[in-house]
Length: 218
Image (cartoon, rainbow, N blue to C red; front, side, top):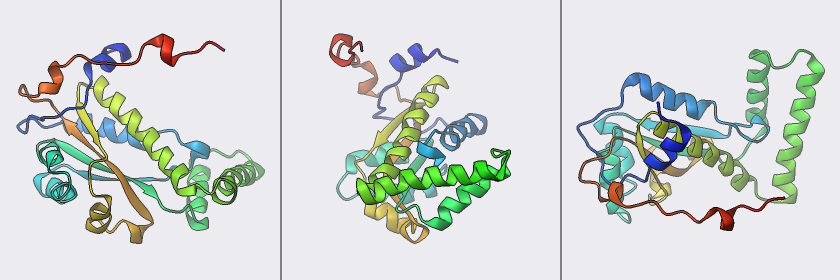
């Protein structure tokens, strides 16, 4: 297992995957744990993940690249696993109740009033974004991007390569997987696998803005 610092310097956006290499079941279960256990504001968990681990599934996701983003097609087809990251379109009362009941089932509330307080607090944040900021869909999508960041780092710690892609036809994904009827919308795709020796991007030095530019002491 790499250290965090080693993983950060080792990982990069993989441009060419080695199609002959497959992520083990055990390692991908850890990726799924990263997604399921990701933090989210008020624990609202507004995500869903469509996972392709075979050629048929990857071909379905690749449909979203073939028209406008053909350069991303091999990154889908040659990867070991591909995940479509989806956000809830709207956090309705039924969904909020399902989250609350699952928390209760998992033993988070020692007293009934604690459950009521959590529901009130979560609803308050949601109402702020729905009625005041008027950015509910964007707020929910931000939580999904938190899970994406955690998955990219976690995969690197496991020695698994990744590439996040917004260069996909989101409408095509929504249609292919009937996401909107389920209350979700695709936001991005991440491919997981192992870099090819032919990947030019693995040989290019990383470039990040310097500490004096990005950090300010309070």
